[in-house]
Length: 96
Image (cartoon, rainbow, N blue to C red; front, top):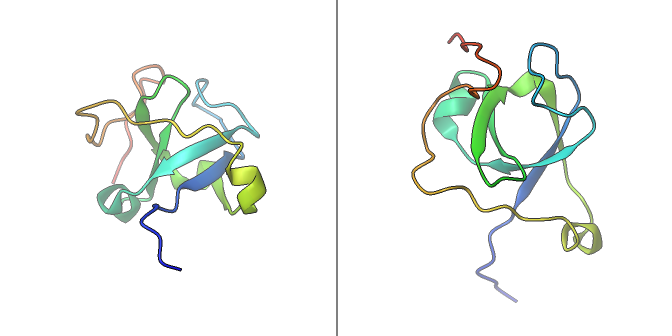
């Protein structure tokens, strides 16, 4: 049976060295971003609804069973938040 629902991706933070705003073992919703992936980054949404770029090696992708996925919050990205910028809180620049 076809469905129009988009598959929402999630990742778990496995390291936060240098990024104090990341919480290790916290589940983050991932936004698809081919340009970010091309430079080794991942775009995640935090609980405020803001999306940020981080090095992809700080996360591990996870695929939860549907019963679990239905209970996870699905944050919506803030409008106009499609830039390739590091989080302001960390004040670290990502190198390409």
